[in-house]
Amino acid sequence: MGAVPSSRLTRILQEKAEALKKKRQSAEAAQKEIEERVALLEQLGISPPESTERLRQLRELARRSDWDGVEIQAKALLDYLARTVPQSFEERRKRTVANVERLTAAGVPVAAALRTDLDALAQPAADAPWATTIQRLVAIEEGLRKAEGEYVQLLGIHAVEVARWAGLTGERLQAFERQVETAALPAREGRLAEAIEAITFR
Image 1: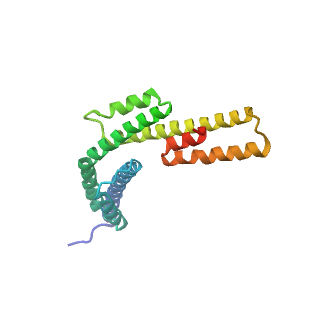
Image 2: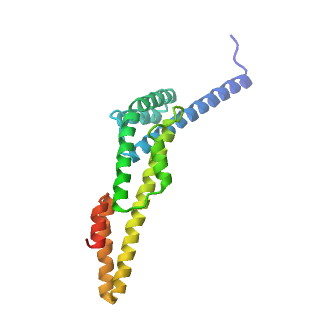
Image 3: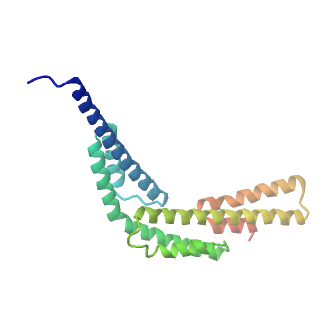
């Protein structure tokens, strides 16, 4: 058997290198997708029991450059999340609905668009990718946190204005402003009612 011509050998090696490059790119894309989805779930406090270990295994396969293994593990993890996430998602959505009611009762203005989006998530379109549905709930919760923060900030500004109107100046006013800032801290931990009571001195 004769030797393979160098030009043909070069072409074969190039083809193998290109195939390996494509396989690696495909595997890295699959890993990126699953990492992003797990991160989204974590933002909602959703962590399916097996996701941490499966993700660890996926990263280990990538570290060893086992690109076939990465794609297989990524697909398996996506299938696992698709089976386990819906129930956890619905529980989280109901918590968000309850949070909207709590904010409304406390006097926080909640945009109608947020309410509409939240209602729509009760029955998402059958063909809607679940990652997109998760992203929508994350956006809604971020909007609620923003509304809550702005409301507490507005209450603080109003309290300081009233203090100025009442005649507080200088060091006494500065001390009052620090008191208001301290009173607002519980809101950062979800204790809105406590912050409102503290700021408004109820």
